[in-house]
Length: 125
Image 1 (spheres, helix red, strand yellow):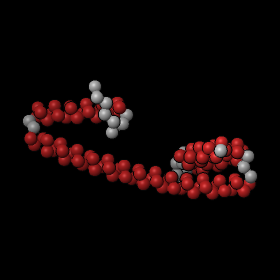
Image 2 (cartoon, one colour):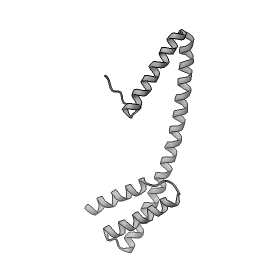
Image 3 (tube, one colour):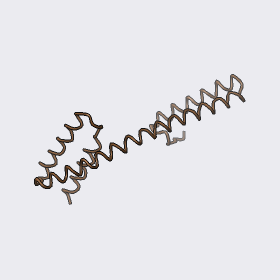
Image 4 (cartoon, helix red, strand yellow):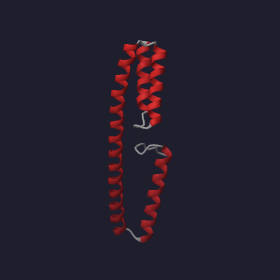
């Protein structure tokens, strides 16, 4: 059981560190595999099977990370457009002084969110 936990931890760590097809990533993958073979005293057959599993999951995780990156970019673009639209409508109904104050309030809000470290969390004073 302990060996299984170690294998899973190292596999997840190995795959999580994958940065695509960069040469240093491939080198890191090989080093991690050697580390597993040594620490777990894997037979040649086990080593080969573990390598196949690592490669399979690495490719899937890299693909998932790339798709999430694309989705995040789309969400950021959509949010930017919505904020611009909102600000345009607010500008039409507020006086110049009110709009300046509104923009200050928005800037303070962004600053608080950045300080909290998470866009979704709210900390009440």
